[in-house]
Amino acid sequence: MLVKPTVVELLDKAENRYSLVIATSKRARQILQGSKPMTNKDDVSSVTLAADEIEENKVKIYDQKQWEEELEKKEQVQE
View 1: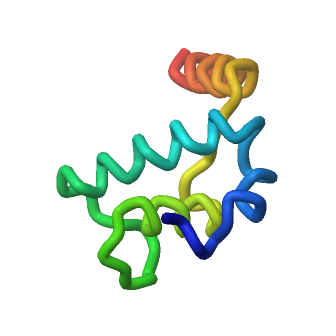
View 2 (view 1 turned 60 degrees about the vertical axis):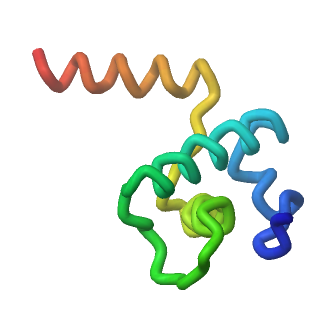
């Protein structure tokens, strides 16, 4: 169970609860598979570490439109 940061505290980082849950679970899976946590907090739970990273703005959650804009920017830089 996620106690701190709470889902309510993290909701301003995502478009909706669904996006928040998906992003948190994907990042938690990456941590479990060996990715180094980007937070200095020490916790055994990969879900809590992922939530901490989102809270600290070390992981950004994009909606579809934002993601497409980011991809466009990267393509323009490469040209």
